[in-house]
Structures are given as structure tokens and as C-alpha cells.
Length: 245
Image (cartoon, rainbow, N blue to C red; front, side, top):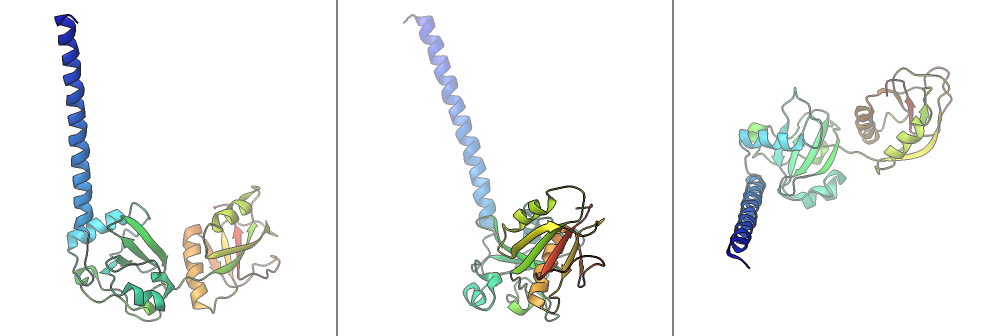
């Protein structure tokens, strides 16, 4: 190999090695900051969260869900998760150190270490005491009576628009959740401008919690009586899809 070719080969090799070093540094730095960010949120049960931690926490959870922008949630690190799970199914996948975030209409369990949601559900208010406020996050984990109690409901979906296929599409979407047992799909008797949820078991607080979450998800109005002219249903919930869906 001639000297000029050897020189060119060595320069190319040096350039390749330099690129490998730069990539390793960038990836290493990214991993450092990722793991450091994870460590910042390793909250011990009963440990008080700073205001900065709460803000960062809400920003993280906001990547997964649309959160109320006009409300300050209550935040606490869960302790005795195993005992809570025995009393309340909402906690069945929670672990000590997971973060409980409570808004006026929903509760969220977030695993800050794994950076993932553990559970989300609507609130059932059986007393006036909610989770501790963000400024007092060292307080005990709220009792299960102040947390959501979503249970499965039977559902019928009817299309109240002129667009075919909406009822089947929504039914398939709902079947992805264990909370909705969709047993019938069809067309509404009349047309609807907006989606309506007919809830015929309104005296059941646990099922009301599930319906509240469903109504929020579908941006629907909840009523407890069949609209005039609509045929009866044998199911606990009847969803009438409207034009605004």
C-alpha cells in the first residue's frame, strides 16, 4: 500500500473512531440524565414532595393524560399498598412509593420509577376528605373511601347519526376495557345532536363512578330516563351516539 493511500486510510479510521466516541458520549449523557431524572422521583412512602417535584410530576403525567389546567391536585406517596389493594381494587397493581394524584373528578396512580400509569379512575365521594394537598404530601395515604370505585357495567350502543358504523366502532373501543361489557349494538330510533348516556342504575354509586368516567371520555350527557321515542333497553347503560361525537 502506498504512503498516500495509507495516510487516507488512517484518516478515515480516525474519523470513524471519533464518530463512535461522540455517539457514546451523547448516549451516555442521555442515559445519565434519564436515570437521574428517574432517581429524583424515587419517593419514599410518607416523604414530603417539594413544590418543584409536584410540578415536574404533573408535567410527566400530563404526557399520558389530559389533566385539568385550572385545578391543583392532591398528591401523596402510597404506603401499605398491599393492604389498600385488599380493601379497594383501584390499588390492585399499586406498590409502596407509587404516587397517588387526586383531582376533583379523577384519581391517578403513577409509577415514577418506571414512568408509567398504574391506574386511572373517576372519583366517588363518600366523604369530604380527599388526599393530602401538594403542600402537605407527607400526610398518610387517603383511605379507600375517598378514592374511585369503578366496576363493570353492561352496555348497549346505538348510532343516532346518519354515519354508518359508528356504533360498532365505539363498541369495539369500549370492549378494550374490562369496565364495559358491550352486549348489544344497533341504531337509535331517532337522531341526536350530541351523545347521550342513559344510565338506568343511577342508585348504584360504584356504577355511577364508571359512568362518570365514560361520560367524560365520550363528552356525553348522562340522563336517567329514556329519551322520548327511544325504545327500551335491558342493559344498565345505553349510549346514543350523536352528531357531535
